[in-house]
Amino acid sequence: MQFEPGSEAVEHLCLSASELGLCVTCVPEILSAMNRRLRERRLKREHYRLIKRHLLEDVADATIIDLTPAVIAATVAVLEMSTVRAADAMHVAAASVWGAELFVSADRQQCAAARKAGLAVKPVSG
Image (cartoon, rainbow, N blue to C red):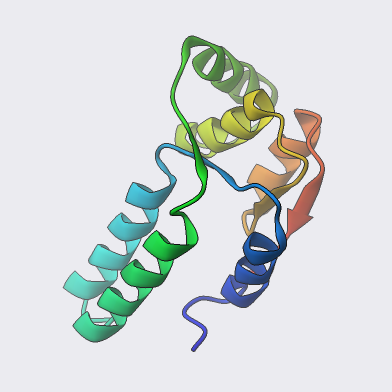
């Protein structure tokens, strides 16, 4: 079952990666969006539980990149050179500080910011 456009491509990339790094805000952001869909009745409770279980299984071995002074400084730099929201800038900054080999996003502006930050980018259809 594909939950979002591009989710299959992201899952394939995650499963084939030797390491997965996620900004500390990633899982809460995803679950926040899913809870909003629950409240709007655009998502059934059983689908939410399935999504949550898959997400937590997928990220169980991930490196969680905290909001350190280096990540905050890099976030400021991303915000000053790109037109992205603060949360999107934090993801780019976390990947940059962590030394990610590949940055994956469905957000066109976030992908552009990641490229400006010197990251290799894989856009997915969203």
